[in-house]
Length: 186
Image 1: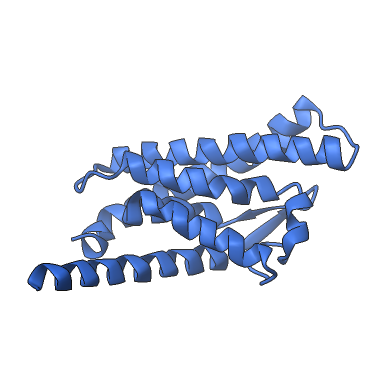
Image 2: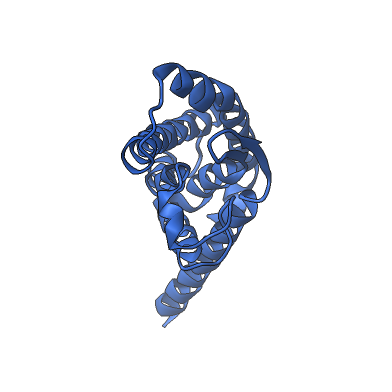
């Protein structure tokens, strides 16, 4: 009986934490700086990485829920919502939140991670976001839109101009996670 109650409390806490993570990823979409080609720098990466640190591999469920909520039409993405959003060049970054959250959570599943471990795990998640996001963008721009993307544009606009922000938010997420992880996962 006590075990059953503990399992219910634990699952309730997980559901509440995943719901909060989903909501925070959505809020992060509205903290944005516009870039060319319908792209934005947002705080979503911060919340995806932080979710991975605090919820573990299940943070991929929060990212998946966020993506589904946006695809059914709720305006939770940086530029709105709806199924047609999959044809936007930036959708690959949203899609990448799922494996990035999973990887970040997998790499930090140990209870007492060091700040460095959090940071490096977050950077691994950011790398996943960039790889999937940039590949998706290239595919949409070249195959769907019929345009071309130069390697110079990819390197300067999609990588150099944004990576600094994601390194900073990963540092911040590592700091925050180090301070509050025990509260979320006792």
